[in-house]
Image (tube, rainbow, N blue to C red; front, side):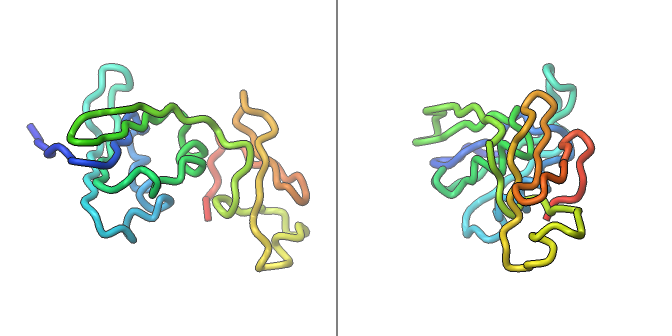
Length: 148
């Protein structure tokens, strides 16, 4: 049995789809933080079968909930203070994301103007479809193309 200690103050990302923790680690820039980070991959879960968990010992304001909601809005965010869970945040798919995914349309202004932000707008929450703000190129989360 693996034992990962309690954290004093920070957050725990739970119910991460198995295998997604390293992508979350990258997109939240947790490698740039000077704090304790624990990643547990393929933990047993009654609900999911297998899941990943990330524990981070730093203030919650360091967390970008929009990117996290885009990656997987089913993740549970547990906020820890004095080694106890004081709140749980449910995530939602953000209505707009910037510089997370790249437009694949070679004629899009965002492909031509390199300094322009890559902006995608949620157009179909049920099917998890985002479209480029500039050219309306479709990005279907279910078909997971490469993120930036």
